[in-house]
Length: 114
Length: 114
Image (cartoon, rainbow over all chains, first blue to last red):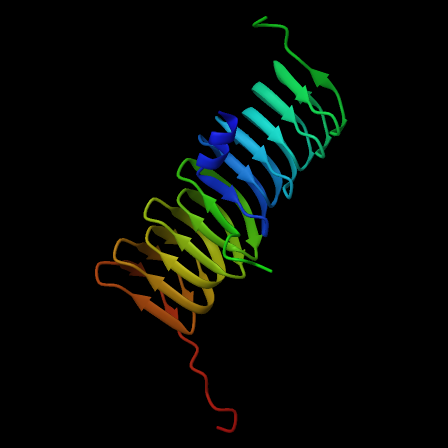
């Protein structure tokens, strides 16, 4: 399902695009480029292999295959894929870290809902 | 290097506040406030609303844009567009039905020996 969402995503920040500022919205966002600042979404954020995010992130789901520096706050799930590099604190009810991922920061899984 | 596949899309539900720079093509269906500087083609779709100074090679507007526009090759304002601001470009096309308020400066290349 996640895969499909990735393909259907409306918004793609291409690999040569740099955004410095604030992104907010109500749909999936795929980052292949660079985003600095702040991201707040009601849906999912996908940071692909070429993506670099230096921002505080507030979303429902986050999937990281690229580089993220900043705090991540997800209402559902955070998935760190192998080869990703993440520095920052993660707060989410479900957190997955794949073998090969590099991560530095605190993890806070809310106990509620379990 | 910037292949045509490097297209960025800002979807309908997305709001960006800040600076947006890059080398690839970009399609805006959502909202952007701030500043845009692109090396290639920027398209503002009919659902798009851009309140920003825009720098691009080529610009196609189907939606709303306010701010100063500086294009190195062409600006096309289509029938459904509403544009406010000053435009500077060698070629400017305004379709019948488009709303435009502002000034236009087309650089007329004078021969060097004049």
